[in-house]
Length: 375
Image 1: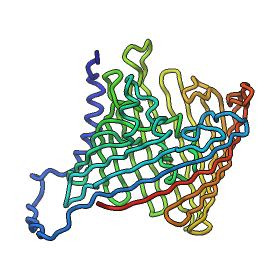
Image 2: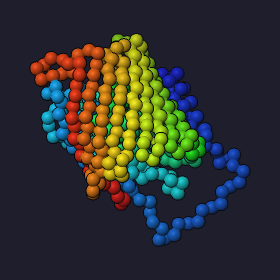
Image 3: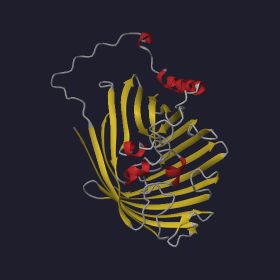
């Protein structure tokens, strides 16, 4: 039976969300009533629903001749794989049409892996095809979203074509959550400052596991058009109700990105987590140079420390170096050739003969076809 929500947690969550909502001035505080808006013309065009989608396939070869470890979606060796096929429908709320929605439907190996942590016995089968599904409401400047949405943590996304590299970092796959179910609010203070807050079930669980709720707050700063800093903090009890020990899980995540020139962009990501005696942290540095509109090169370096409890399943200190050649072809097709080496101070990577190695090197070719339209 689900326990009652802890009063202290509820107060913290309500205060976090109320802080966002409170920034919206009530109608009674306005100095003058706004002029009534004219009735829409009978020929006015109704708000459009945006439709986007893609198909993502890859071939990966691990020189250890075994399925690679500590990877997120590129988990097969010497095989052509359908990573992900997605179609998304979205209506963005606006001052003229304040209700909106978004639904992302996913199919493929990545959809299975994304839902692998669902706690209910049938949760994976129910939710694996729904990457996101939420309703939106614009009240003043605050946008409220209720439903399932991807996490704000990290520097990368589930969709490979929206990242600088094809494969995901170890931090993306093991240090932070993938998604949440609950309520979130976003308030743009001005063009340079934005606040956010969430009250959710927890990490990667569409169904509840303990009756407690997880709280998230965020701050986004854009000092200039080329510099963006994002800070995230999330805290909650993520242990099942029948767990022997129950400690709050804290996660701090920050990302800094800077467009140094029109062709050269830099980015850095840092994560630090703690849950009782378990601690994990890591950082990732990125660089991307766009030689031509149709071709660029991106590099990523990671350093990880998972020795205090093995939260990321590494249980050791590790490093990862990735180099990606990105080619934008005709007709919405993007192809990427990627070389990557992972290293650890202990033997954690599988090899063909069943032994463990301290290194793992892979060569991957990914191809994504994307499309977009309106209905």
